[in-house]
Length: 246
Image (tube, rainbow, N blue to C red; front, side, top):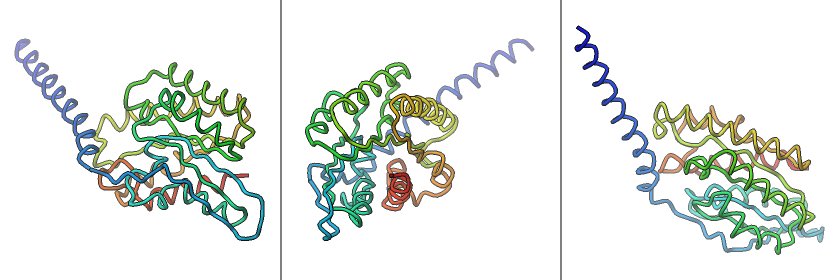
């Protein structure tokens, strides 16, 4: 009888291991096979209210979520939508400094110097999803993120908004138990961001809590890879972000 139970346990372990392996591979295979359109982030956009008000330079720092991966053009990305809203009151120059796949380390080393030379009035920072999915430790993430903030607050006079890492991925893509794991990591990293926002007296914008349940229930908020947002998803983020601007 003891041998029988050991065989059952062994079968459960093997089957469970196979499931975990395939469910994990499924996530990144589906993202890769999505073959998403990647908007050109090298463009500089001028949005004007034609009232000769002051001109604001808005720099959006981030990864593919800021670049607008998943939509047909950059005008559907959240930075453009936010700039468009700002443009109803001011003349706005949007510079999207983002790159697909970037982690905090990449942003710090590659995008940060350019963002500083842009001499921005407004900065939004959304970074961390790729740190989570590439198993960057919380300690290393915190260190990189703080170095970014140190540089931005020292070398610019911009109003800086820190955007929380959204829990993204359709329930049809992020299968259990990975949905619980990524949710836990997202909350852990967002706690770090929120604490750093308080330390540097910066505005923290929580797009995670406001959208997680809604995004999980409906695939219409996602592009065809079920990971990056659709135009509808980015529009929701843009509304939340702009509503939190001073």
